[in-house]
Length: 133
Image (cartoon, rainbow, N blue to C red; front, side):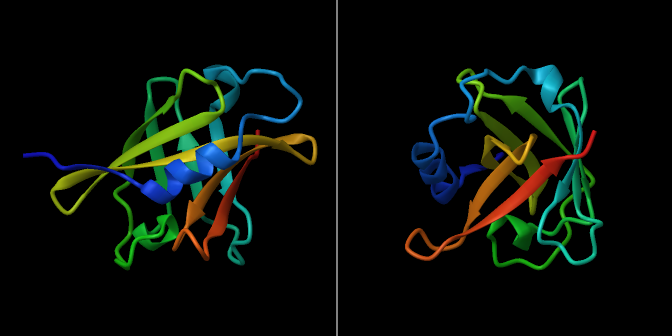
């Protein structure tokens, strides 16, 4: 049986952020490519979104998405742009189940960023990724 888990914290961040600033809708094609984790001192953690719906995780750990486990994420999962065009949903297998996280898309500093809220709803932090293409 596949367990599906959707982070309540991530869903809360979606409600807090309405959409990409600037009012322009993001297309799936604009989301393709390599997203580098900001605030990562090694500059090596990435999510690569491919046109076939595959998401590749490079040097990311489950902990990077707010879970307590220290294990690395599997190399691949899936992604999709949600119908409101301001949220990307990621799914990845972990410990016999499928886990999901939703990140809000934002236009920041002239580029596209993907923000995930991580931690307790009263004391969360943002994990931010920037599209590098």
